[in-house]
Image 1 (cartoon, rainbow, N blue to C red):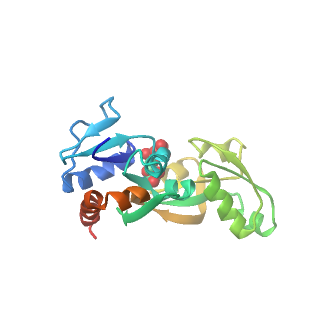
Image 2 (cartoon, protein in one colour):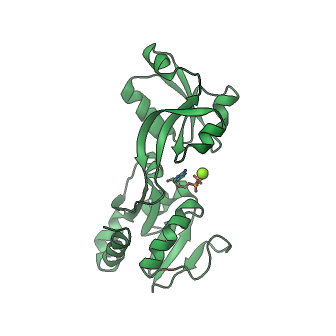
Image 3 (cartoon, rainbow, N blue to C red):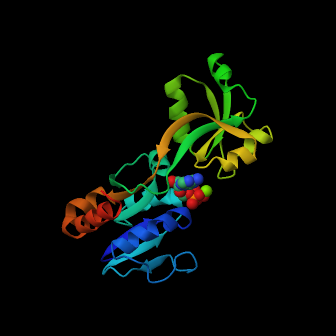
Length: 214
Ligand code: ADP
Ligand code: MG
C-alpha cells in the first residue's frame, strides 16, 4: 500500500493521541472509537490510521505492515523492540509498571527470605527479567487482564501491572510494593522503512516530536 500507516490502539492511547494527530494535521476522517473500519484515512495526505490491539502495535510496525506506530513503553519492552526505532517519547498515557501485593503481604520479607513468589501478569517477559535481575525465583502466571483479581482469590502472591492514580489497586485492597519502570507512549518507526523512505517519514516524525513539545 502507498502512503504511511500509523498503527495504534483504541481507548486510552487513541484518546491521548487525538490532540497530537490534530496538531500534525492528521485528524481521522471517521471516529475510530465508533467506526467498524480498521483502516481510517486522515486529513494529512497519504497518512492513515491502522487500528489494532495495544499489544499488537509493535508487531505490525516490526513487519512493515505499518510504517509508524504509537505504543506504551510497557508494550515495547515486552515485545523486545526488534526492527523498531523509538525516536519520540510522546509523553502521553503516563503511568508506572509496578509489583503490587495485598495489603498485609510482607513482600520485602518474602524477597529477603528467598521465598518462591507466584506472580500474575500479562507482562511475562518483562516480569521474568525484572525478578531474574533481582535473583528472586518466581512462578509466572500469564493473564490477559483484570490482574488485580489474582491475589484476592489466591491465584498469585503479587501482580505486575500498570498504575496511574492507584484507585483500582486500592479498590481491590492492593498496594504497590516495587516500581519496575515509568511508562509513557512512544512513536515507533519501522527501521527498514526509515532507511528507504526517509523523505516521506522524517517530516511526520518531526511533526510528532514538535506536537509532543520537544
Ligand atoms: P489494553 O487493555 O488492550 O492493554 P489499554 O487501553 O488499557 O489497552 O492500554 C493501552 C496502553 O495504555 C497500555 O499499553 C499503556 O501504555 C497505557 N495505559 C494503560 N493503563 C494506563 C493507565 N492507568 N494510565 C496511563 N496509561 C495507561
Ligand atoms: Mg487496560
